[in-house]
Amino acid sequence: MGFSPKLFTALLLVPADIIQLLLKVAGIIGGWFGVSFTLASGIPVWYSWIAVGFGLLITLAFVYGALFNVYRYATRKVQLRLMKLPADFSGLRVVQISDIHSGSLSDAAAVQKAVDSINALEPDLIFFTGDLVNNIADEVLMLQPVFRQLKARHGVFSILGNHDYGDYYYWPNAAAKAANLKQLKDIHREMGWRLLLNEHVVIQHAGLDIAIAGVENWSASDRFPKYGNLDVALEGLSEGTPILLLSHDPSHWKAQVIHHPVHIDATFSGHTHGMQFGIEWGKFRWSPVQYVYRQWAGMYEHAGKYLYVNRGFGVIGYPGRVGILPEITVFDFKGNS
Image (cartoon, rainbow, N blue to C red; front, side, top):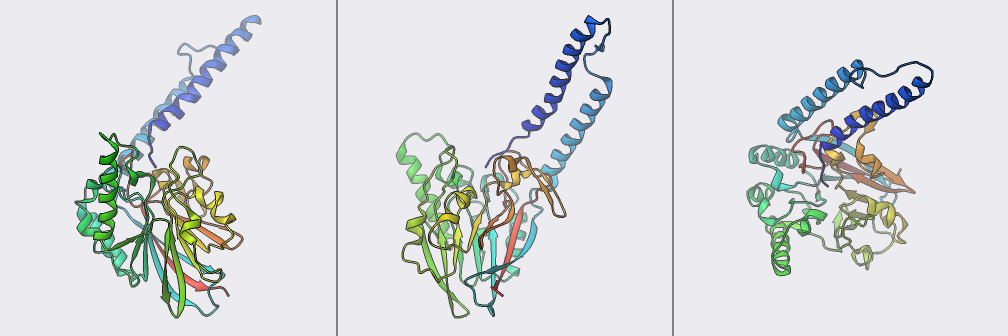
């Protein structure tokens, strides 16, 4: 998902336009009674100072976010209890990262530190939930040796995001686009990641079968492609098997996942980046992206089915983050007590 700070310029101009309009209307009405509401500038002086101060504050925040927050990874720990896990179950640790957007990352040393911190968590599973690149497969070549070092007891599982298909790049022909996608899929495999393309894998942990399913990109919005097929990904799974689903776009959860006849215990998504701009203060969370995505960051639940939306590892559009830091998520699974 992309983001442009031009939004804030527009937001700043809207109040000024409204004030100008109100002053004109007040001037017309006041003229009927011999009263003037018009200032020489057309805008109150106090508003001009507020606008300048607000603009300066936003500018400084965005400069700071670009200089210091791109690689300032926040590790979030989440305890997750699933209905299908026995009460005495414990010890499954999953790390999720999402939206790497390799073409926007130039500091391999900083990414290496993040990879080292993930490996130090000693995860049983690592999930990557899509958007390895911005547009083309070559973007990841510099970082490929770094991401190849990710290690987990049961392996690294990955899916594709909307940016991975090359849909936003001008290709000379369809064959070139197809070759790029094949190259990207090969890179997943060369890094030792198990790329799930509308399919599932069953692992055994602590004597229990656990299914890891992954769908290609599917969005409730017509602006994004629908390559995913949930029915195919779940085909052959028994109802009693705990199912962990990787699906890039969180809108998929409400549109299809929670209504599917097969109970999907937990879904892991990304895509929104938290818009790379927002406020998180204690339990209070706000970002403009919440007006587009109801599920945009963190944990959500419906009838014992969970969704976690990762805030993303990389950046796109605006080359920084303000208030919404890049995320590494650690899940410790427990039985349903």
